[in-house]
Each structure stands twice: as C-alpha cells, then as structure tokens.
Image (tube, rainbow, N blue to C red; front, side, top):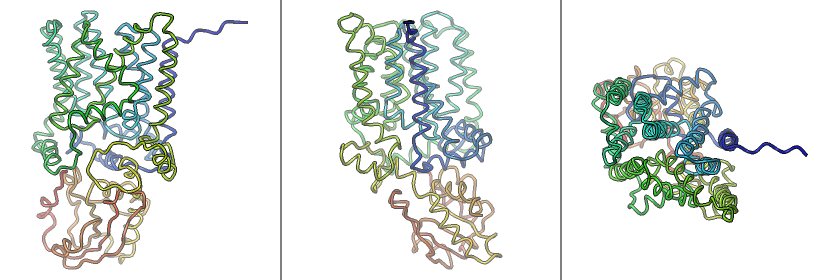
Amino acid sequence: MPRTAPLTAGMLVAALAALKLILHLYAGRYYGYFVDELYNLALARHLAWGYVDVAPIIALIGRVELTLFGSSLSAIRLAPALAGAALVLLTAAIARELGGGRFAQGLAALCILLAPGILVMDHFLNVNALEPLCWMGCALLLIRIVSTGNEKLWLYFGLLAGLGLETKHSMLIFGFALVAGLLLTPQRRRLFNRWLVLAGLLAFLLFLPNLLWNIQHHFPFLELQENIRRDGRNVSLSLGSFFGQEILAMLPLSAPVWIAGLWWLLRGPYRVLAFAFAITTAIIFAVNPRTYYLFPAFPMLFAAGGVQFERWLARPRLGWIKPAYCALMVTMGALLAPTLLPLLPPEVYIRYVKATRLEPPRIENHKLGPLPQLFADQFGWEDMAAAVARVYHSLPADIRPRTAILGQNYGQAGAIDLFGPKYGLPPAISGHQNYFLWGPRGATGESMIVMGDRQEVLESKFASVQKVARAAHPYAMPYEHIDIFYCRGFKFPLAEAWPKVKNWH
C-alpha cells in the first residue's frame, strides 16, 4: 500500500485556520446585526481621519465591504472572519520563529481557534478583530530583530505600528510596553540605531492624520473614556476577577499553555515579550479593566507555550499526552463556544445555558432579558426601523420632507440608517458618539419622530408631544424596549440647542 504523506506543520495550521474561517461564516444565521455593526456601517458612510470613539481603519474596511459586497451580514463579517483566520496563521508563525516544530505550531494555533473571547471578537465587524494582527505582527518582527540582528526590520515594525494606531489607539499601550520591555533587558541595545528612529518617524507620520483630527476636535476619545469611568457603566473587577475572566475567555484548559509560555519567555532571550505582556496588563487594569482589551497580547504567549509544551513532551513515553490534552481542549471549547458565538437559535441557547449552567461574564451593568447582552444586541433593530417607518408614512405628504428622526444612541440611529432606505426613511440624527459631530443634518425641530425618550422630558422641549408607537422585541436588551413619539414645534432653534444633545458615553 502507498504510504500517505505526513501531515506537515503548514498543513495542520492551514487546516485550523480554514476551520476557524468556516466556523465564523456559518455562525450567526439565527441572529441579526450587532449594535456596533450598525454604528460601524454608519461610520463607513462618513469616511474621516477620526471618530469620537474609534480610529479610522474600521470605517475604511466597512466602506470597502459595502462597495464590493453590499451590506448583508455575510458580507460585512467576511473581514473579521479573515482576520481571525490570519491570526491563527500568525500565531503559528511566531511559534515557528521561537523554534517550535509541528506540535508547538499546531497547539498555538489550536489555542487561538478555541479561545471563546477571540471567537467573539472575530465574528463581528469591529476593530477588535483587527487589533491582534497589528500587535502580534510587531511582536513577530521584534523576535526576528532579536534573533537575526537585522535592524532594518524596524522599518516594517514602524509601518505596522502606524497602521495599528490608525486601527485602535491601544496600539500605544502595546508599543510602549515593547519599548519598556527592551529597556529592561540586555536587548536595550536594539533601541539605539537610526533604523528605529526612522521607524518611529514612519509610525508617527501614519498616525498624524488621526492625531490632527483629535487635536481639531479637542480629543473626544479622552472625554468619552472619562465619561464612561464616571458613569459606572462597566462592571468593576478586582485583579483576581480580571484574571479569572481572562482564563475563561482564553479557555481554562489553555491556561497552562499561556502560563508556560510566559515562563518560557521570562527565562530566554525573548523575555522582552514577557515584560511587555506584564506592562500591558498593568496599564489596562489601571486605566480601564475591560477583559477583552488584553486579548491581543495572548497569541505570543500561546506560541511560546506551544514551544515549551513540545519540549516537555518530547520523550516518547509522554507522546500520548499530546492528542489526549488537545482532545480535552477541543471538548471544552465545543462546550463553551455556543455561550459566546451565536451558533444556536435563541430558544435553543436558553435551554443550553440552563442545562450546562455556562453563562458568559457580564461586561456592562445593564439589566438583561432572556439573552446575554452580546446576543440581545443583535435583535430588534429592523423591527424598530419598521415601527418608525409606519409613523413616518402616516404623516401628511407635505410634512414628511421636514420631519427628522432622532435616536437616543448609535444603535437606534444606525438601525434607521441601515434599514431606512428600504422603508423610505431619511437618515437619522443623534447626539450619541460621532452622530453628534454630524449635526442635525438640516433638521429644524418643526416635525420630529423621537425614539426612546420620556414624555415629560419631551414636553419641556416641544409644543406638542404624542406617543405613537412602541418597539419591544422580546429578545432585545430591555433598555431597547422603547416608546416612539411624534413631536411638533421644538421650542428653541435646533442648531443652537444641538450642543446640549451631546451624549458621549
């Protein structure tokens, strides 16, 4: 019988990357647009060098997807799914660069595939799917610089860091952590050369348009972060709770791998990465301890952990541990995946959680309905737009062109902007996040449909207020069960009153 070709490291990693891509393309068929996707699509229609709460790359990617493929869910989720598959390949490449063979590369790639938190981030059109590629691309280049002494690679580092800054501002945290890590190790000699200076200049030039936009608008992102801290929206975490959620998000059975990776890095020539991880963790926990902010730093630990596990299990009598441990990881990953990735219909998900008692941790302090926030925020948006459309088309024909639609948040406004053309609606206005900077769009307040406010508040601002509809999808977040009002005669010039509607939270 002919012998079958051995499974190479490249073939194994490629298979895992393809599996991740297929998983993301399959998931979500029972759900709708996530609230942040509605907003990111709105940004994509208003390209700029900056936005209140995000850097510009996500809007550019959204515009490319809208132009090439349209606005369907499968179209807009292609980019994050591809980014997730690329992260599997990149993590394996880091393991190979650290000296890992087939098992090390495969284990590192498997950890990324199974990590529940990374599954979430790679499923929606959001900036967090792109961020790890920038962080880990810089980590891989730094490993190459240390191992080969090729200082010219700093130019590619600067290019990637600059793109990372235009992707998400937290690139500043990881970039600072890498430089600080170099200063704390003998590799500090790598910092004093012209190539690093040129790399820093390149990164600065790439970031400059967004920096100038922030200066022009008085750094709205900093104002937003301060407002979020002040209003207590985020769940408060102790250091123990923070790491407990990180362990759960990365898969509990993967924890020995990344912990071993951190230990391996600390004891070898690449300890700069261990220091960078520690510094990044400290900054994130001190500034804004949202668990997912640290996700982009884990792939390098999985890569190093794969190398360490490969060496520990190199003796033939320990070989059985490799498939056994990987099988346990896959089993646990399969159990946890439906709690964070929309694989099951809502009613099946509810039964699954009751049976397994597996629930995703809370990120924000909002009241919940039958679904966790991650899933609930995918329901009710088109129903909301349809309810507004019924009100809009009930108005006299001569009043409609002078009627504005006001949303209280970017989800409501984004739903009108996405589904509105189908129902013959004008674009929405809102004071939330970047919608505030787009202004009232010519609205005067003479005739307005207002989503989700209170009667008494509106009566203090309008001459006439009438509750005309309600939108309340049973699976949507409770705070998105809203009343819809038709208001006439705004008591103040809307253009002058617009600064008061600003809602940066």
